Length: 411
Image 1 (tube, rainbow, N blue to C red):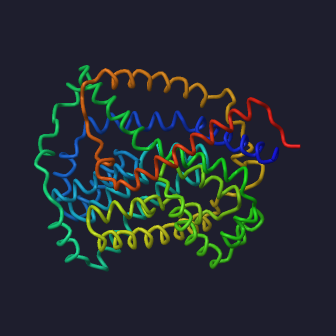
Image 2 (spheres, rainbow, N blue to C red):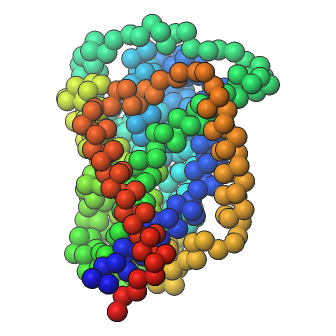
Image 3 (cartoon, helix red, strand yellow):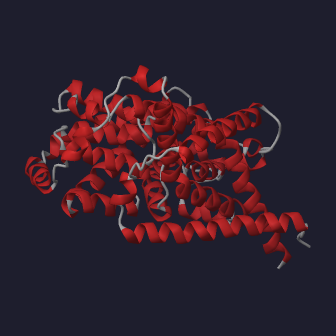
């Protein structure tokens, strides 16, 4: 019994430590994202993405890069720009860029995994878009796209989106209230994913033995990383999306889980496939089905799975060719780091907590009633399930902290 309580306490403190390490990165990224969302409107995006040529795809990629990293928000925005005339490939480019090329995601990956994975994330983001373009060209789903466009309805209200100049917005209290609204909405969109993802990461670190990972990911183990066969790398790359599908956590919540996979000797390709799989989880599939119908939802799922597996393999063997694959050793395990030490991250956390407090106060005082697109379009069963699991995760963390305070030790 004492062993279980000690493990519970360890898992909770690990989860909180993970979040403390990444807090400033979340806050910084969402602050930048909020500024950009206020200054560059969805209407301005869709006007530039009317075709599927190189320029439109490049613009879709750029607009995705400067947008939110929340998977649900990305889905909603993608649907909005697609139904207003943006090309299908351009819309997919936007979707992939907004969940793989955003600033805050790269910072969080750097904190937990290192520079090779940052490079893999951004290079992989462009590869994903390129492979998606090729996939659409070869499969040529013109009839499917045409049917989906007929299914979608045009919402005239979106054409009234605010178009004031950024100079006017940044110098007015109303503009900063709008920025504060976007900032709070960013946190409202991801807090469940982050809470659940970081809690699961702590539980896995405390309760799941190495043998589990070695069984699930064939060939995993620190001693085997440099000598994996192609079959081992391929199988791990295929298992990555399956593991992500079962966790159903968005892009920002699955990074500590990816770090744990790497800690247990999963290959670079397997870890990258897991990270890239934030758009192939069950809630995303259900939302796509609601937007576009099941045929298009399954087509997008097949597109994403094919492209992320191909991208992960290309990244793995390209990095291997230049001897750039990250090498894991027990000494650099994320679990063994002092997560609460006084360093630059601690100082940045204090600074961004202060900034967040100011923005929170502006949000609270604002009389705006901005709607949460991703929440209003989500399926109720997903919302219900996420709320239940979030409550359980919160209870787990509080219980672990209480046990830590009481000082129960394993015998």
